[in-house]
Amino acid sequence: MAVWVFGGRFGLRGHLGACRLLGLRFQSRGAQGEDDGDGGQSSSKAHRLPKIYTRTGDKGFSSTFTGERRPKDDRVFEAVGTTDELSSAIGFAMELITEKGHTFAEELQKIQCTLQDVGSALATPRSSAREAHLKHTAFEEGTIAELEQWIDKYSSQLPPLTAFILPSGGKSSSALHFCRAVCRRAERRVVPLVQAGETDANVAKFLNRLSDYLFTVARYAAMKEGSQEKIYKKRDV
Image 1 (cartoon, rainbow, N blue to C red):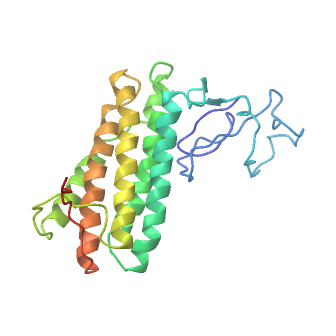
Image 2: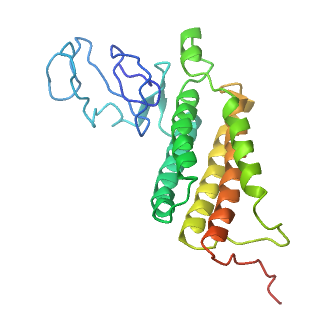
């Protein structure tokens, strides 16, 4: 049986600590406490490293934190997967940003951690969640206010927008614009879950504000690096 735990990969009998691991994964345990697949050793042994592969998803199903088995193309996993994709895109952008010495790299790393919390909330559909599940995966709206503060901080240093800009402005800026586009897609995947009452509305609000933040720091990176942003020009017919 498998279960989602706090953005990490743990068996049902595993320790439910406040661990944050990259990638929303899970580990399967057999009925007798053994790993599925190769007849491995008992799960009672301490400090056992979880296997990367479990074979439990080979038939196209995966498990939520609540223990539900759902098809992998279920809208819950579409939202979880797109959020993971967003975190990966941000991780790539951070490599470029760190090379340029931008101080907001620390903010991006903090955002990646928050996206793990987003994934945990999404992987806990309310239709099958118990109170204990909801308590451990509650998403706080304080993260939204923090994003707004960061947006205001950088916006005050930028020249006003007088035209539509295209994703451009150097490698750092372009990578951040790509992150913004992925973020918008993640938001589109989350909105139906919010409307169905399956997840916290603050998750969608966070993603909405995050796309604004990514747009702002993309422009800020271009300005700091002295790179020219490309302006949209209507083509002559």
